[in-house]
Length: 95
Image 1 (cartoon, rainbow, N blue to C red):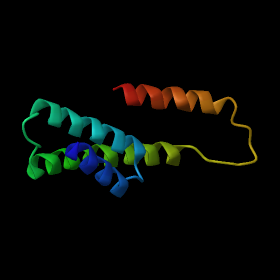
Image 2: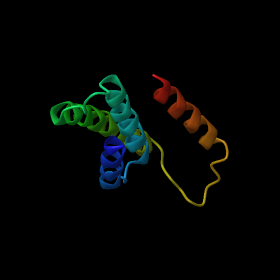
Image 3: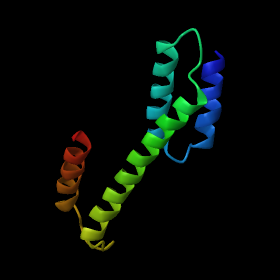
Image 4: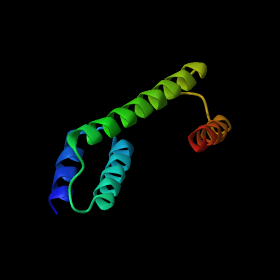
């Protein structure tokens, strides 16, 4: 139960990135299940956090690059463009 409380407190600190939080919580719970007799060390958690931060930075960079390729005009109807962009983003996320 102590692990869950720690994880919840940590999630409150990084709640600006909800998807990241979900993945981090899953990773943390997996680590706890792998070593049910003890909690993972801080160094191990910091390493995981560093890995997820790198992934998040990379994804943010990709989003910014994609956004810069498309001019946004709020008065234009994007009914045709939006499905194409969503499909492209889905393909990227599957890789």
